[in-house]
Length: 473
Image 1: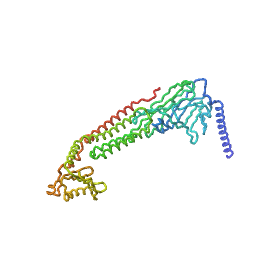
Image 2: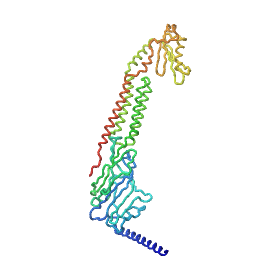
Image 3: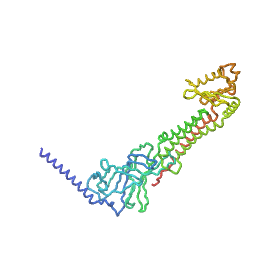
Image 4: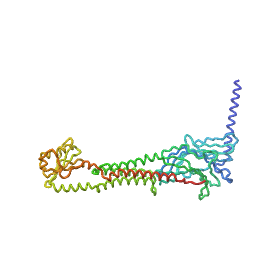
C-alpha cells in the first residue's frame, strides 16, 4: 500500500511538472513569435481595439483649474494571431513591477485631455494581462487621471458642466488602429461610484469618431459626463448667508431715525460682509471675461443694502417734523438768556452744564446710581433753589432732548410741577416711524423675494436647456 501511494504521488508530480514545462515552453514560444515593437498584421487591415472604461470614483471637479480627477479601470481587447497557444484557458503572466509593453505589443493608447496620469503600484503594477488560446488579448489597467474640462460659468452656481474623456492612439493613425466601444459589454462606459460632495454626475453619451492631425486621421472614442451642481450645497454656502445679510440690513428700518450711528453701522457692516463673501466665492473660480449669474445676484443684493442706506438719507432730509423742531429751537434761542443741560452718561455720571449768552460754557459731573433718575431730581432741585427766570432746563436722555422754560409765576404757584412754555416733548410722536420707513419694511422684502424667485427660475431653466458639447454619432 505504501509503495502504491508513493508511486501515485510520484506520477502526479511528474504530470504537474510536465504541464508547467508546457506552459513555460508556450510562453517562450509566444515571446519568440511576437514582435512587441510592431502591431499584428502590420501591412494588412487595421487592428481593432475594443475599449471598456469604468470610473471607479470621481475625486472632484476643480472650478478654478477647470480640471476633474477620476480613478479609472481601462480595459482594452484586441486580437494578435502571434500569441495563439494550445491551452484550454488563458495565460495570465505575472507583470509585477514591470509594464505589459515589456512582454508583448500593446496599443499606445492615451487619454487626450489628460494632464496627469499614474498607474497604481500597490503592491505590484495594477495591470492584468490575459492571453486567450485564439490570440485574443485582454488588458486591464487601474490608474488615476486628472483631465482638463472646458467649463462655462455663466449660470454659476446653478450651472451644469459637460466634461469628456477621449482615448486614442498616440502614434498609430486610423489605418493601423481603430478604437471601438465594446458592444458585447452591457456597460462599456460606466460609473461605479457617483458620490460627489458638490455635484451629481451621470454619463450622457459615448461616441466613436475620427480626428484629423498633421500625421493623418486618428481613431477616437469619447465618453461625456454631465456634472450638475448640487442645489443644497450652493444654497447653504452662498444663497443663505447672502439672504441673511440683506435681511439684517432691513432692521435699520425699525430703528429710530435719531439713532444715526446704529442705522449707519448696520448698513456699512452688511455691505462689508457681503463684499467679503463675494470676493471669497470668486476666488474659487477662474478669471473669466463674461458676467456670471452669481455676480448679478451679489450685485443686486449689494444694491438692496445700498438702497437701505439711501433710504435713511431721504428720511433725514424729508422729515417735516425735524424742520419744525429746528424752527422751534431757533425761536427758543432768541427768547432765552441761558439754558441748563442735564445729560446722563454711560459711566454712571450726570453732566450738569449751564450755557449762557453772557458767560462761557460750564459743566460739572454729578455722581448718581441712576443718572436718568438723578436728572429728573435735579430738575426739581433747580426749580426749588434757583432763580430760573427766562432760563431753559433740558433733559438729554440718550438722544431724546426734553426742553422746558419756567417763569417766576410758575415757580411761585407750584414748585413741584414742571410746566413747558416753548414746547413739550411728545413721547408718542417721538417713537412714531416715518412713512418711508414703514413702507420700506414691506417693499424691500417683497422686492428681494421677487428677485430671488426670478433669478432661480431663469438660471435653472438656462442650465436645464444647456446642451452637451459632443454630438458625434
